[in-house]
Image (cartoon, rainbow, N blue to C red; front, side, top):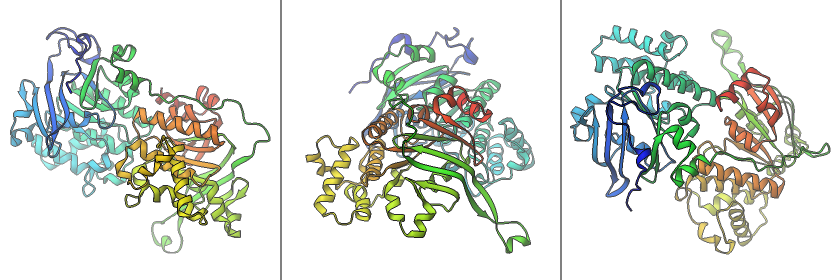
Length: 562
């Protein structure tokens, strides 16, 4: 299959020395910093990147966009030969020197010096055995020849430039002692330690909350202007691209299908794949009519409080425990057939609230599902029947589905617990019907072909549909959706959200939706609760709260998602 031909007006850069049309810091007489031609990447003879071409000028911000498996990360990291067992051909001229022709020794001098990388997940990219300051200082000593004392002073200065509070103290902290945003800032400080000419930022905000995403994006843009470096941003988040990049290049299945100035591509996309990505924003298809006054309450909480025991310092810690209040005095009401969205950053208490609603955490205050209080059900031994009425769909379907069980075993497991009287044939029939309900099987008569497969044989979107089928097979009244689409690409996310909305209309299901994505809340929820530091700071009708937020924290969340 030959690579698609790019439109000349979109794919071309202005002549050397001419002002580029996208403006910003790259405008003016900026020369070409990196020019990639006919880049091909293969694994075991199987080509996954098919002869792509792109360029980056000094001081320019280029976004490489595509879904998982499109080849964008492999393409970028292959330039530095950071992809194990990859066979790479083509040319990648960095200031006229071909990176792909360098020896490993020569390339080692380029990595982290002329070209630096910010990886997607800072917790896995940082060494847990060394302090953040030691890891940044190591780069300064190796690349800049600084003494340990000079490296420490420079490290504190770098951390301060990224906006980390108390940089002297944070330099002595280990990665696990920092928040997600602080770890990403430390990764950026490490990348900037050698003042690189080009920064490869691989999904630098995917693991962060919505407000932190905006902060990190602003930080990168500010540092890029200060240092005059070019940035190659690898992402699937189109809002990020619109806000950050000068130009965008779109990849599909290893082909570069479209590239050009961000405003032009987003306003008039030429390729059908680009149009599909831009049309993949979650859409609202839920019932807009308000719930009737006599509608049954599926979930009710009054003064809900959840605490975790924590050790106390000193001698008093020998005799008693302290407590950390994760949820403090929350009031909730969810009617049948409705969706209550709970939004907030990491540490706000929303996941703890979900676990309490599932009866998996001890709590204080009133908490009832379909009129039955969890504590009362525990006293009377009715937990099993109550658990049938409320099920959960987790964030990451790959980790929530057992890799050792077949699809028949995974989806049918709930029936063994809640309907043990079913025969094997009856249970199998119910499993196939559940797969058909979530759109995995077109013809239930042929659904048996899927039953003996394992989770690794399915895509991310298919695995999430399996997780939904597993939850629905016991016919619950309420589903707890814990970040159900955050691990999925934008197009798959839209498909899963449309499936959930269809199931709600057909079955009258109620959803407790836990997320940090304002767009998902806007598309799915009827009511919304905003949480910060364990407390509900604002709640009400989703349109009213998102269009006219009262609390400053809600305004920050809404503005960050704009």
